[in-house]
Amino acid sequence: MAKLRLNHLLLGLLIISAEISSGQQAKREFRASVVKIDITPDEPKMLLGYAARKSTGIHDRIYHRIVAMDDGIKQFFLVSTDICIMSPSEYDHVAGLLRQQLGVEPENFWWTLTHTHSAPEVGVPGLPEVFMGERYKHDVDTAYTSLVKQSLINGIREARNKLVKAKLGVGWGFSQANINRRAIDVDGKASLGLNPDGAVDRKIGLIRLDKEDGSPIALIANYAIHGTVLGQDHTEISGDAPGIVSEYVEQKIGAPLLFINGAAGNLAPIYSVYPNPRSGHLSQFRVLLGDKILSANKEIVSSGSDIRLISGSLTIESPRKPGLSWPKDLGSYSRTTASGENMVLLPARFLKINEDVAIWSLPVELFCEISNEIRDQSPFPFTFFFGYTNGWLGYLPTEKEWPHGGYEVDRVSPYTPAIEKHLKESVIAYLKGEMKSLQVSRVDSNSQPELVSSEADGLLRLSARKGKAIGPDIKYMPEWNAFGWFTASDRVEWDADIKTEGLYNVELEWSVSDQEAGKEFLMEAGNQKLTGTIDKSGSWETFKTKSLGSIKLKSGIQKIVFRSNKHFEKGALLDLRELRLKLVSNP
Image 1 (cartoon, rainbow, N blue to C red):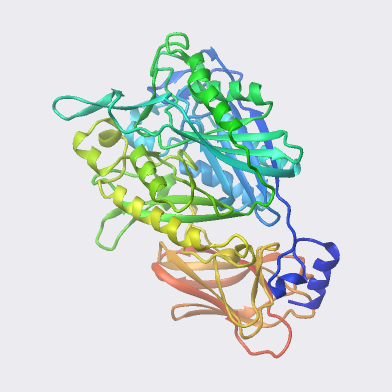
Image 2 (image 1 turned 180 degrees about the vertical axis):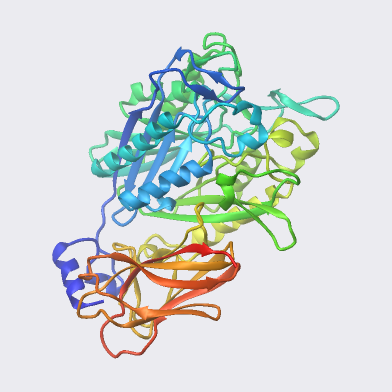
């Protein structure tokens, strides 16, 4: 890294100081904000959650609720939206726009859904069209989908601009507003109903964000319950129990509540699928759940401003149910092995807050027994599961439920009984291993190497944060999301999962001063090599993107290396932010 860059950082007091070189970190402040956006449509819309039906009015309004958290290095955005489910490809599209427009990495953008069955459809059907194609004979409502997506992006931009100094506290609550819905008959077969003897999770996980003066910014409540108080015959738009509870709590505390659904795959509200709000006792959930959230909130007596955030991700691979077809828009969530077995690629996300809180999420309707067991084995005293996050890839039951069959197992799950074992082993190992070992006091000054897989559009992003830096001088610079101090003796390595063999165009995002430009680089993948020179970008602070050429890649997991092609005595090769590989042609 050139001396000019270091001087600029020191003078600008941007993020870090020269103290980092001696192992000390500059003082950072924690900030947070919240935004609430009405997304209630003005005209009738097709509702999602039961058989195809169109709305006939509005019972209560639906919203995006968006929390932003910033620990001084990382910004994290959590969205709770009052809709039922959406395809992961819709999440991928918004995540791509956020990365392009605002520089938000997908790992730091979680889009959760409350799972109300009385809200409009958003985007393409995705996997539900495979399971229940008879419900999707109509066209996709592109106008409403665009409204939902654009308002979310605008909300994140607004939340980023509203960040204020904040404190964070956590706690637990308890509510008996839910019940197991897997009714088992004498023949051992399951059907949708109520099962008071079945497994349940009645814990409420709470995260509260306060301003410096103690006044609330937002409350996050994590509870497992299907949004099905209102049934098929009810055709007015509604947030169902999660929406009613959120509005009630907001009136009491004077700040937005983000309702985050949990492992509700086999959990129903105690009043379920009624034809109207009165017969379903919808308003009583203000007492059954809302008052329990308020009581638990009062018990959060300790909050602090010294907050550090660490996000992570993990892809869990498990066999796909035999004979099940797969939507084209979800190509990046499945692969076929060399032996011809179809696999589901299930993306898990993780967020660690200091050393006490671990949150993990999946785009599924998880059975509560799995979440309960993972929470019990977690090394973190506060372990929360966020369901319905970043899309929907079906129901994920326990292995023992397969013989009982029923709707969740027979009709709307793309997995086999092996999924429970694969999921628990992967998540528990990640929580006990990588998440626990990463110390918040040092992680942000280093990259976080991990296996990189192609995105939905086939693009492979080799970001600096996901690469492994090797050498005497190279450093990861979190404030620039790039590797700097990149000398002739340094290199970066990525482990990449190449889905398709072929010719890939390579783009580089980099910066370099005019004085240091012109040095030769080498990119290697197996026995394939790509060489060239590092062009001027204008300054160390100016990042540009250009095509470097093409390279042939074989399918499978392989190592990709970027380094200097020739030795040089002084100076730096470049600041490397990302390599992007796009498939050009197949063999």
